[in-house]
Image (tube, rainbow, N blue to C red; front, side, top):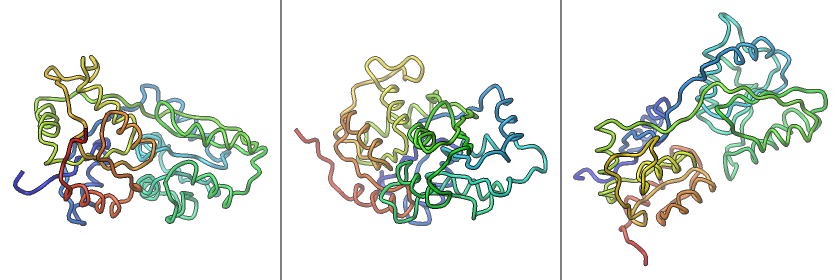
Length: 279
């Protein structure tokens, strides 16, 4: 590739554009290659009921920007975010989505900027700092896809909260079209020209399914072939994601916070390093 390596954005398509713009401002060339498709749940009634009862919640936890988007798609017309109801999230992308949806900044709780990692483990102390450690008689709602943030729900229950969950979307393996299959083949056949950005363990799993031997019938390609994962370079935004990538066989994995500047720095480190296949 004449222009040097590109960073492959594997986030769902709805978030890829935002990341592309932020990384472009930092001089990082990107290419969208979503490894997860997001589709709304077929039954919107639970989300609508959750909106009707939202004023009874002390905390609403959003697991991702997609959770924000699909939950607010069901918001009753002209209804404002209830006063005093905290909105929690682990990542700046979700926090930005909440602000854009009209949630007051002062009600958004997320890990502090200096946190070692942006995850539930670093969000929970912040929730306790803002809302107190005793949740007896208080209600919390988890807004998510088909699962997620179980650890945080358990901590809230242990503190006395009544925790419920509502699913507003589901994740699935993307079905590649002809252009997508060609892009995947290029990324794996020419690893020196690409660096993957993994922000989900599930996405890494779907990538493995696409090129497995045999490939998964749900998301495999017709021309799957063996991959030398030792020559594939990746940036991972959490230790669990990095571990999943390494379990696939990757050895060139850099762990960073899910922050554009940190990702850009890691990309430059990987893009400037020679590729080797360790024995």
